[in-house]
Image 1 (cartoon, rainbow, N blue to C red):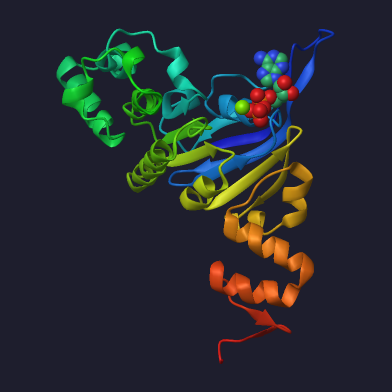
Image 2: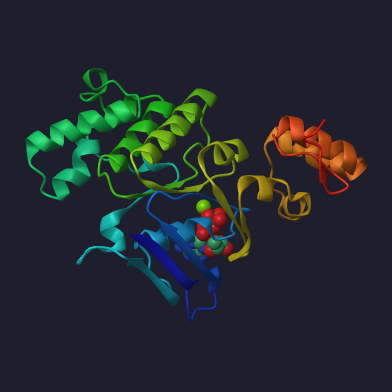
Length: 279
Ligand SMILES: Nc1ncnc2c1ncn2[C@@H]1O[C@H](COP(=O)(O)OP(=O)(O)O)[C@@H](O)[C@H]1O
Ligand SMILES: [Mg+2]
C-alpha cells in the first residue's frame, strides 16, 4: 500500500484576489513501513501536504491516491493525521470518550472499544486506570498532547501523519513522542512527520523531504540533508548539534571536519579519496 502524490498543488482562495499558493506541484510516494520527515520554513506547505496526503483536502492540481490497496480503501480510511496542537480540538467530557470517538463513529463494538482505548493509552504512556475518567481539560499540556495522539493511534491505520507533534512541549513529553514513533514503526506503521526538531527527525526517520515555498528542494537521508550546510542556511533550518559542529568546522578546515565527522557522526573518514580503515 502506498500514498502516491503526483504533482499535487493547492491554491487557497482560487479565483479570489486573496488567492495564494499553498503547495506548488509536489510528487512523493510513501510506502508501508516508510518513515519520512517533512521539514521546511513556516508557510512552506508542510501542513497542506499532510492534509492532502490524508485525503482531507483535495488538491487543485495533480492527484493524491492510495495505490496497491485492497478494494474500497481510500486515503481517508487508511491515513490518520494528528494536527498541530490537537488538544485544541478536545470536545468530549472524559479522556475515554475522547479516545473512543473515532472507534464509535466506525461502529466498533463497545468491548473492542474498551480494549483498544486502554491499549492506545498504554502506548502513549497514560495509565488507563488513572486517566479514563478525567476531563481532558484538566490534564497537563504534555498529557493532553499524548491523549490527543492516542485518539488517532487507537484507529490503528497503516499511515500515521504527525504535524509538529512535539511543538511547545517539555523535553520529557517530546521523548515520549519519540518513543511512541519508534513503537508505531515497530508495529509496521508508516510515519510522515512534520517537525522543526532536527534531533527528533534524525532519531525517528530514514528520509527527510525539505519544502520551500511549496516545492521540494531536498530529499535524502538525515545525514545528507543535515550535512548540506548551504541548504540549511538558505532556509534557516537547524541541524542536530553534531552536524552543526561538523558544518561549522568544514567552513574553516575541511580535512579536520572530515576527521571529526568520522568520530561524531560515524562516517568513514576519507582523505584524498582513500579510506583510512588501515590506520
Ligand atoms: N486556509 C488557508 N487559507 C489561505 N491560505 C492558506 C491557508 N492555509 C495555509 N495557507 C497558506 O498556504 C501556504 C502554506 O501553508 P502551510 O501548509 O500551513 O505551511 P506550513 O505548515 O509549512 O507552515 C502559506 O503561504 C499559508 O499562508
Ligand atoms: Mg504547518
